[in-house]
Image (cartoon, rainbow, N blue to C red):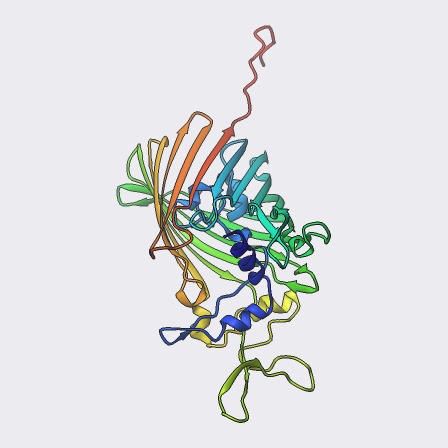
Length: 412
């Protein structure tokens, strides 16, 4: 299973992989998922939003907002906070893959906040063998990302945020027997915005509306060996409505949409056997340019800036396929007395673009400065690699310590 994992990981970053999967069919539709390097950057790293179908761009600010929408933290009510989440990943396939997330924020003043986080993805242990199957050693690949961010309120209801990210991936080192070769690395930025309305009347109840937009992982390609690969540049937008049912009961409903800002793999033209007249599995090469001949779609080997804009109109299946590149998250959160929370949600990705479809459930408990959250993922299809994924989060949020007044001091 470890070797299978290595093969899959390598395939995700190989340029030729797109050509191999683009001709597969599912119910008459072309399976054409968008693949990138370092996909761990898109995994939901915390239990709160993880329990709401991965909806998080317009939820209330918390210590994990850096991943979803860093601009939310300008609206944080506490002075500072820190949190950690552990996510055992793909337990149906391999028992030792884990995602660790450490994050925190600090309110500089009522309108500004600084954030930082560390995301560490351990891919477990892989046994290395030679051509005859004799074990030659062990290799433990990993990937990590370090973030620094800043958010600023521009008005009572609106904020902007910016984040900087350093990304490092060591999965390519195994191809050099784990002893030579360098880890791949790159940098990226997040550009985010958040809107939170004042409370308004909803009949006899009070409501608050939120909206968010986040462009994340905007950065240079990452280089494995001689190939350069797009990182998962992403656009997330959505909204929410939080309703105060009474003094102790609150319900929030949230909706997110996601789209990768990465070129869609084209459909390549394959050579035809001159004898039988049947299509072969060999891609046709343009004798002038030396490039693969594209039958439908656009060339994905473009600069980063061009790739971002191209991603909105390069699907070989036209507008219908472009719309299939949007993932949808729906989340629901109920709070009792601001102490106990119950969450649920649903994540939908079209079958032609990866077919990640699952329900989520979660709970949360808040006591003084301590928050404990947990979530569980339930795929809609049996024997899904995501089956059994759970997350456990622990966080602390503090107000500044109040200074005791000096009884001998002269009061004004």
